[in-house]
Structures are given as structure tokens and as C-alpha cells.
Image 1: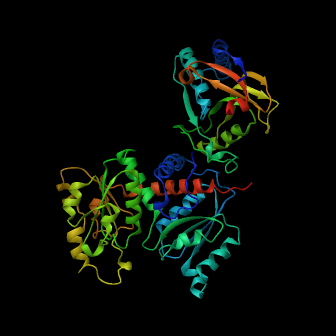
Image 2: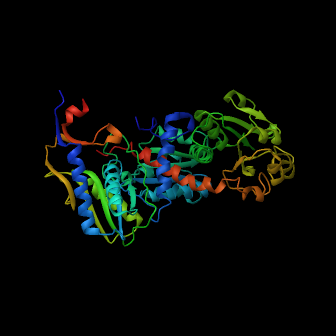
Length: 311
Length: 184
């Protein structure tokens, strides 16, 4: 059985371990493709994809767009800032209008949790969630896990990963927790109490409030961005204090008795959650994450498109 | 009972491979500007044997690669299952090289068409030739013919040509079975 068990990619929660491994295996081939002189394959030449971004994004949108173009799909882009959403159109109406133009697959980012699921139940096209509010960001989790696999090997059993920062507002954290646990890794979250959801331990993750202890425990540290735009109220006294307690700098990294891998989903606030010399060090795989993002998104779109039956 | 007709036994297969290697040598002499590329998944076994014979004969290493054509196929989404790719292993540029594409069975010609397209991602070759172990003639969907042919057979659409290798199935042989028998 070499087929995804789902018709849409809404969240990692819906995927099986086998799905994730299939995506990784397919991404291996696409990674070869994007490192060739001609980085394009014709697989999806009769597929049209709409990228609907109801929330700002640079990296994810570019990454999706590049993935689609390298598969030879036709793409249309839509961003809320320049659209009729501002004029009061509902999500379903916007999307139905776009679908009337015969689109096969929709990649959507939306500020409301559950928007991707809502859409997938109502339209006749495949949906890929590119981030829905504070819920999930599945392709980010897949590319993070894929980057860990590349560095630490295929077997996740016994691998220890700590996610540091704003867990409460992070869709990356939630998707990462699901993904890493399905693959068999142990997950810990670390941050100030105000940024860690109260019942997160019910997901089976460890909770630690001391960054040094968390780093001593882990093999991989995923440093999340402090999302200033998502903090209506102050969750910590000042950025300076956050950096002092939860920022990763070279001195702290070098004082550990083992070499851990440092990740960051971007965009980086240099000097806040991570210092420049750590971000640019050999232990950081931040740029590999970006490269792998294209391969993972190509794999996801390729596998979902394979389920669109023309005949 | 499964009816199985042998096309080439291990002895004949060896003779055929040696003849194909000689023909290649005749046209490419010292192979300075020639690269051999096997099509995944099954052409690479033919390539391996041809390479072995030629390298022993010429006492030099040949430039060889493996090409996967999955993403270039024309039957994507016309199958039940998505096609899962194999490895492409071409760590050289084929710009201005003479390329010999190698596969085990030539049937409709669609794989070779995909192979030609996939090849372009690695440069513009000076010339492309096709070597085939078994040619199922009169079954072509596309105007594609091989330059080097191991054995030509006439088959029915309902039949399948299977090539087995000693390192995989225990012995070298090529045989013909009916499709229903293979699936059953």
C-alpha cells in the first residue's frame, strides 16, 4: 500500500506513521531533483493550484510556490491584503469563486484554527493546510522532522527533541509534537509558564522551565520565534528578560557536554530567542530546513495530486 | 498451472549480453566520450552486466549512471497507486556526451519516452542510443526503436516478459508468462 491514508493535509494528527514515512521517502527523490542543473519535473503539468494566504507569510508561500512550480503545476496566488475579503466576502464564497476557475488543489493559510478542515469538508478540491491560526502547520512539522532524520538517521526511537519558546500560540509546536511522537521520538517543551498551555502534559510531552536543563536532556533543540503579533497581552515582562532566560547563545551552547542540533522555523529574531553566532554555527540546520521545506512540500503535493482521478 | 515459456536461459543470456557489449564496443571504441545510463528499476541490472563485461575487456572504468523516470511518466494519476520513485544516480554532466540508455524490455515505448525527457535535466547529449535486452515488436504505442537488441520476440498484449537475475532471483533467465498467471 503506497498511498496516503488522507485526501487532504489538514494536520499531522490525521496522518499515520506510514504516511509520514511515505512523504519522507518521496521527499528524498525530490531533494535529488532540486539539486540538479534543471530543477523541474513534469509530473503535475495538468494540475492547477491556488495559494490562498489570508495571513501574511513570506517563507511558507515562497516555498509552496517553488514546490508547485518545480512540479510543473499552474499556480494562482491570492493574498487577503489585496482581495475582496476586505470587502466583506466570506471564506466559502471567496474559495468557491476561485474553484469555479477549475482549481484542483488549494494551499491555504488562515488566521482561524480549523479553517482548513472547514474548507476541506465543503469544496471539491484537495486542501493543504499551510497554517491555521494556533492549530497546526503540518508541512513545517514534516520538514522539521525530515531535517532531524537527515542529521540523526531514520530511526527516531529514543531521539530527544525540545521545543523552546511560545508553545501556547504556536501551531508549529503542536504539529511538531504530533509528528515527532508518531515517529517515536521523545518531546519536551520549554518556556515561561505563561507561554506553556496548562494541560500540555496530557499530550505526553515533558515540561521544563529551565532552558539549561532542557538542553542538557535533548539531542535537538527547536527554538521557536517569539510571536509578538500574537501576544495581545504581555506574557513576559520584557524581551530582554525573555532573552536572558530563554535565549540560546554560544556560551550556553558551548557549555553543554554534548553537541546538540539547533533548529528554528524562521523568521529569526536574531538576539532574542537565538543569538547570531548560534544561528550561523555548524550546529544549526536552519538553512537545511528551508531547503528541505521545498522537497517536503513537493512530496505532499505530489502524493495528494496522485489521488485526483481524471478518468 | 502457470505456463512459462523460456526466451533466454542463463547460457543464452550470457552470450546475448556479450554480443551486445561487443556491438557497443564496435560503435564506441574506447568510450572516452560515452556514458551508459540504466533505467530504473530493471534496466540497471542489464547495465551492471554490460559494464562488467566491458570493463574486464577494456581494462578501464566506464562512466555509468542510473536514471529514475517516475516523475516524467505519462500515466501519473491514471493508476490506482501513486508511483514511488527509485534512486537517480547521475553524478556527471551529459552535455555533448554520447549516451547509451539501457533497459530490459522494450514494449510500448512509453518508458523510453519518459527516459529521454528525464535525461534532458542533465544536459544536452550529443547523441542518444537505446540498448534493449528483449524487444517485444509490434507492440509499440510510440515511434521508438532500439539501436542494440538482445532478442526480438512476438508476444500478445496479455503476456508479460520477465527478466530474472542470479543475484535477485537465483538464476539468469528471461521468460514469457500470461498476465493472469502472473497476477494469480
